[in-house]
Structure formats: C-alpha cells, structure tokens
Image (cartoon, helix red, strand yellow):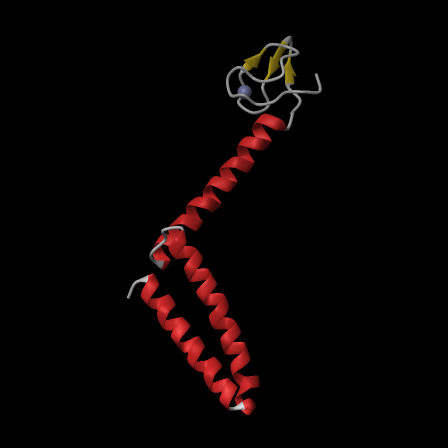
Length: 119
Ligand SMILES: [Zn+2]
C-alpha cells in the first residue's frame, strides 16, 4: 500500500466516522478525537507524499541526516564564529583548536579556520 492509498483509506474512515457521528449524537463525543487524529495523520502523510517521501524508513533516514547536519552546522558555527583566545608558549602563539603555530592578531587560524580573539 503506497502513501496515496493510505491517505485515501484514512479519508474514507474519517468520512465514515463523521457520517456516523452526524446520525448518532451520542457517538459524537467519542468519535471527535478519532476524527481529529485522522485529520492530523492525513495532513502529515500528505506532507510526506508531497515532499516525495514514500516510506517511514525513508522519513527516518531523512530526519537522521537532518539531525546530523544540524549538529555539524552547530559545530562549524561555533568554530568559525565564536572566538577563542590563543595560547602562548614562549614567543609562539598556538591555535586553541588545532594546536598549530599562528600569527599574532589574526582573526582566524590559517590551519583550521578557528576564529581567534582576546589577544
Ligand atoms: Zn587552528
């Protein structure tokens, strides 16, 4: 069963539930949360289908990749935008990120790109 089939089936269940609730006011209270859940599920599955995601495994893979890339971006932002104070060993300045010798008063390490500050 593909996503369109599932969405169609959920829409059918939703329509049947709504029709039944219309004819039986006592069931309205019980069926309203079901209809709301179906509406939300249909919206989510439709969004998946519209973005060409066909299976739950594919969605999990994409979300896993997204989380990994978001973490990588956070690491890169910290490295390139948040300054760290270089260390000084004798007359030599050392990058706090990679440990290479660096030129005093430069904004970034020439070796690794770490933003430098607090000279
Ligand atoms: Zn460095």
